[in-house]
Image (cartoon, rainbow, N blue to C red; front, side, top):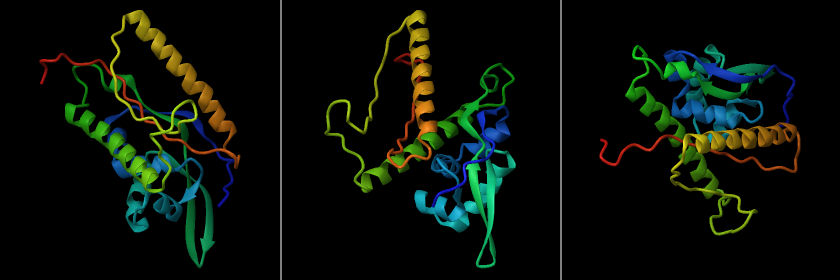
Length: 205
């Protein structure tokens, strides 16, 4: 159902501490965030991510507690209070300082949990898209709607900086398109997950 989009939203939600990161990087909570392309009730979120709504309330409360999501509408439905939730920011970003320094509390296990949560959510979303007949890997050319790939670049520092700049330009440009299309019925939602990191040596564990 259409929702009122007149609510405050920040450009970025900066994750500055380990407790917030752990509360947010849970596969179910990432799915909840990904589902909130527009405001939704818990029932609507549950339907989209194929989850039991009664099991989502705990996650919703935890996310609301750290201000990752917000209540934007409250209604009484059959005598029961029904809340509509929305994101609080356009992007959710981990503060770089959380990864740096010898005294950081962010461990290898914490990083592994975060990566696993993100890719687990992506896998589930892709599986649902395939089940719905939305994924087509055979179509060629610019109209191909699905891209699943893994690769390798050997880059100089200058080329790496150029790559980062171009990626940021693309994300900004298409993010603006997406924002302008929020109330359009002639668009389709697309999900992306990007992983980019230095390749470890071949003999590393």
